[in-house]
Image 1: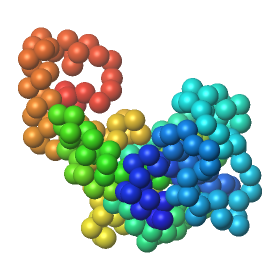
Image 2: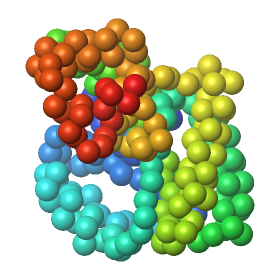
Image 3: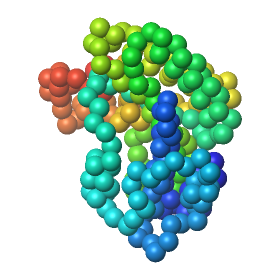
Image 4: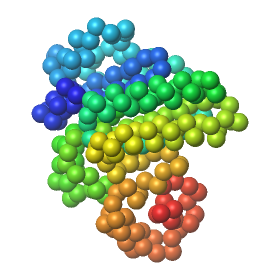
Length: 238
């Protein structure tokens, strides 16, 4: 929460936190080459629970980061399904969701072999304001701090597909229920993290959905992309 508050004061600050059954991974980013790590990240650097560094702090590019992450991340060939949820930031919400995550993890471990995780991805209000300043966006987002959650189930056995999907639905439902009860659930769903079980475009709001349909009708009146596109988050599914 301290770093998220720093993001509202300095739009160059960014981070993510990924929680797995065995480790918590923190990604810290700053959109400028600097001689010293920004003080915004001090709350993480001062944690006594640190066990190691996946990628040393350095100035670099997106490409160099991808190379370093690839070299330090074990390969895991598995079936994978994500889901996307958006909420407002709240430490209490994080704690309650983690408690539910541990409950699902315990149930899953006794049912089938799977790797469960979730990622907290803060988005600063400056991100939304920049989009609005550049002729707006289709997502229907208000300029406010928010979290784009990504929850993931990975497994090997294709006979467990139904169980994996149900596990993900439970994780998704738990978070939504907690956030809803606290008045912290946001309608929007980040397409990059959404599952095939979600309909993303209708999370943009009725006005934006109507605008997308109007644009599609204008540029693709014969519905080539709607009918011949094999799959994806398509207007014809709404």
